[in-house]
Amino acid sequence: MYKFSRSSNQASFRADRPITVEEIQHYAPSVMTDTPHQSRAQSYKVISTFNVLESMQDEGFFPYEVRQTRVRDQNKREFTRHMVRLRHINNLSNGHEVPEIVLLNSHDGTSSYQLMSGIFRMVCSNGLIAGSIFDDIRIRHSGNVIDNVIEGSYRVLSDIEAVQGCVERYKNTQLSIGQKVDFAKQAIELRWGEDSPIQNPERMLNIHRGADRSSDLWTTYNVIQENIVRGGLAGRSETGRRMTTRAVGGVNELVRLNRGLWDIADKMAA
Image (cartoon, rainbow, N blue to C red; front, side, top):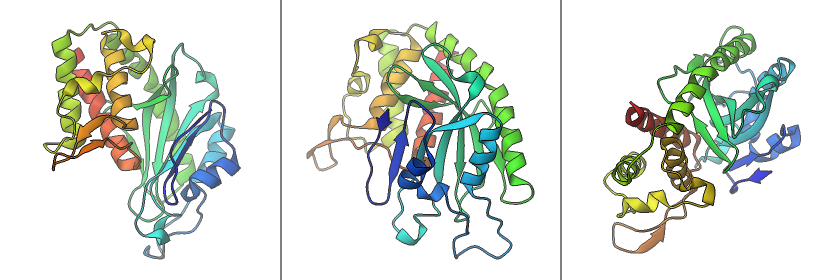
């Protein structure tokens, strides 16, 4: 079981089995909301994400992770953007990588339902999301939302084979030291732009387990993704003060970084 950082207005939780209703309520209350935020017009249709999850469970999809983004306005905490990662009962195991459906939504009008392909890497608890080469599916808060989300989930699931094909291609692509450093530089630019606290890109290649000593593109991708998302790297602020990088908590930023890293890796594989 894996539990990530939590504060009064931000939470994420992951387990190695389907998570419970109580865990969803505790860590991501916005998933349970069945009313719109007060800023929405009367025509705005709310279908609770939890109601969608219940229907998806009937189709064999079960949640393994929930996360909701940080908000400054506490009145929006139970309506804010959230992410649920699900596995289908027929795709629970595939060696060290498990395919997942990534479901995004909010009830404050900031987003529609969004579905994407994902890969969960068993060895280090990384949650990777396929990049923009795999079209994500967006479903508006209108019409038959639940049926549309379920249909979209099966469409995304059908893309998993293509995602897994990319993973195998990355595993078979060996990188030189220079190429690994180049990947790290691009990842730093993606995460922080010109104001990066990481002056030495080789810090992004720090490994946390012996299994990550390989120089293939897939392993390098995972090492860099873990260092970016989990933070904890030593660096310096713009004023020269010593600091450590923070973990990425917001759903929007997490998705942006995951997809950006995937695109970098895909270009390197080409």
